[in-house]
Length: 380
Image: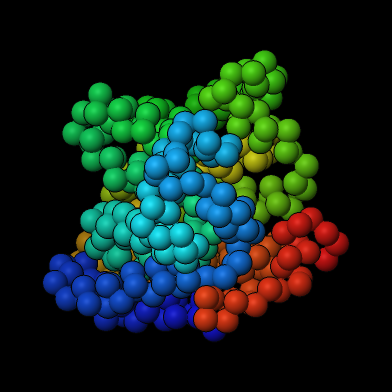
């Protein structure tokens, strides 16, 4: 099955090239992984529920000569303009999907490679947890997410005005990017006792969120959030699973790696912000699920760095005995397995696997009756 190919490449790359000291080798395999992901998503045929919507949108949108702000078809103008530019070059849906996939995947993998010594392990976590979702279900929003990843160094250098200008641009791709204006405040968050007051504030905020959004529903920038507020009937299983892998597992990873082993935590503030969002899922599940899209990559990359340190960087720790090293390796592999298993639940819950299986491409464009019925809201 084609979905196993990126998994195999990530595992092979982790075994061969993920090392705590340098990454001079492995770029060839990294490029292969990029091409496989781009072509797998770019050449897909009706794989993913929202793919149907994007196919219809691209068929309707005019090329750049006929584009105006008024013909965005309900999509944000930045994404609509990008779509029209692509259609000016080619009206093939497969070219369209490939260009979007190449852009999103390229910026994503660039961020991963620059921010961890264990890029293949990080891509393994990202692929299982979010990649298919990002590539098929939230194509517009995923471009805003990777835009945040790209402009995050501006925050690290405290260049707030350029950062805010980029965020304004990202909002033209998906309105949910407004959350990026709050990312700078994550620097005040730490995984220790100082997080407790923020937990209380978030609890109160999540309880007030629904009535506030109902009052702001008439304002265009809040319109999409207001729609999500009314989509709350998702069930306890849906909410509970996301609560586990967006909040509880990150808390466990931070406790073991930061508190127990004192491993430096990259993006600690953003991870704490995700935990706060995850705890808020119980009150407003759909809204905070969307906000977590902007934090999850930061967490997975940081988690890969911490798990990789436990697994391979034996000289980082005071106790360098063989027995202690084996214990850390077992613990690291357990955390990796727990993360993969937890996030895999996304593909089976509510039979979401029907959105992705079986896989068909431009070379075998087959309509799957079960998927067609599922996407159209029929009985399974």
